[in-house]
Each structure stands twice: as structure tokens, then as C-alpha cells.
Image (cartoon, rainbow, N blue to C red):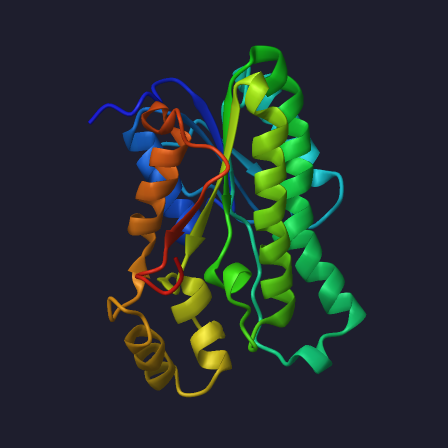
Length: 247
């Protein structure tokens, strides 16, 4: 199915693993011109450009957006996916941990979006998709700082949608539930941080109405749709892809 992304420049943060990697692959398959951003190496999935950056650093989100624009002419689609979740108790979160969590899970999106909006407003078009979390809708006691940052991200997404709709810019949020990515299943991931890996994964899957984790590809499919012309009348939406966990 044609989705109207042919030749559009799509920048994906956190684009070398998990949901970001699946989104990069799906965007390439949709014939978008893909820019991946991560701290690591290029994913080599057909992207036109890879930019290495630590988006927790204040100037880096702006730098990668501007570099993509300089090399490819525009950023038509921005997918803010980079993030960090760590299991800990609310009373144990230090000031330094709050700062890092907010920088990666919220401020990286605000900074990248602010940089992209300048050119999008001039072109009078653009699509922004922010990857939030069920924890932003229903706070997780195991990930308090992450929950707060993702709740703020949902509010910010709505703010952008309402402020820039008249400029032809759409902004939507995707709300994944637990997803089979290294963040959950990898060594030191969220499952291992909570106890016996297999037991934690089984319990988390059973808690979903659909009875399983999402795949990264299932989340990516919704991101691509929201970024595309197929969703031309969708903005300000909080699109749950949570297996029924949250509305």
C-alpha cells in the first residue's frame, strides 16, 4: 500500500535498535529517505545517512537535525524515539538520575522538535511522531522518573499539535506497551532488573489483554502510518499500541 512517504526525509532518533531500528526498516521499505541517529554505529538497513550523537547532551538534538537538513535538504518527518528506562523506587531516584532521565526521555524530543519546526514552518508541512509509553498514561511504580518524563512528553506532543496545525504540521504520540526489544529482553534489561528474566517476561505478557508482548515491527507500523499521508487528518492523537493495556 502506498503511504505517501516517497522521497520524504525521515529522521529517527534511537534508530539503531529496538523500535527505532524497526521504524527505520519500515521507512526504507516505504521509500522514505531515512536518517538514523544513535550513539552507536549505523544500522545499515538502507538509510541514506547515519549521525552519531548523544542526544542527552543539550546541543546534540539541534546539531543532528541541522546536519540532516544541510546534507539532504529537509527533515519532513521526525520520529523522536530515543529513551532510557531503569527500574528503581521513587524515593531512591537521585537528582542526577532525574536529570538524565528528563534529558533523554523529554528534553531530547523538545530540542529536536524545536530545531525541526523552523524549516517545517517555512515549508508548511511536516509530521512529528513521539514515542511515549503506557507508563506515561498509567505511572509505573518500578520506573517513576521514566513515567513522569513520558507523561510530560504526551502533554508536549499535544501542545505542538495544537500550536502548529495551522502551519501544516502534524504531531502525534505512539504509546507502546512492553515490547520485545533489547531494552526489555537484553542482558541487564528491564526483565533482568526485576528478578528472574523468564518469570518477569511471562508475568508481563500475561498482564496484557492480548496476552503477549508487542513486536518492534508492530509499533513501527503505527509510527509509519502516523508519519504518512495516510494519516493526513490525524494530529494531537495519543495512539495506544499496548495490547489493550491502556485506552
